[in-house]
Length: 110
Image 1 (cartoon, rainbow, N blue to C red):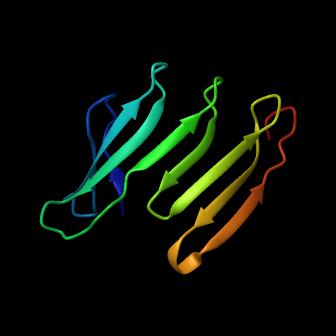
Image 2: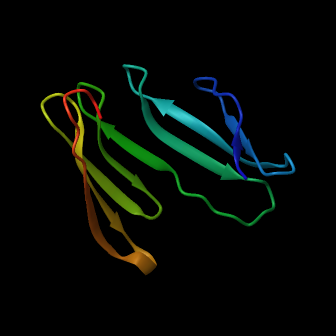
């Protein structure tokens, strides 16, 4: 089970496994509005695990418009009230292809 330690902006946050052994560190980068713009992960030294970074693109309102990581990328679309109405995920490798998920939200936010 993965447990996330406390988050401190601009500092690494660490994860642990069920035995509380450190797994990775996460370093967040921010844009000028102090919104997360990127995440860099690192695995435990000597583990041989490689983990890709994630890059985020945000629009003026702060909504994520796209993301790229080691498995491909994603595009996000929002309606005029900033509610996500669909996202499209493109995978590389074994699950290669593009998949779209659509969302319906009421005015109450449900």
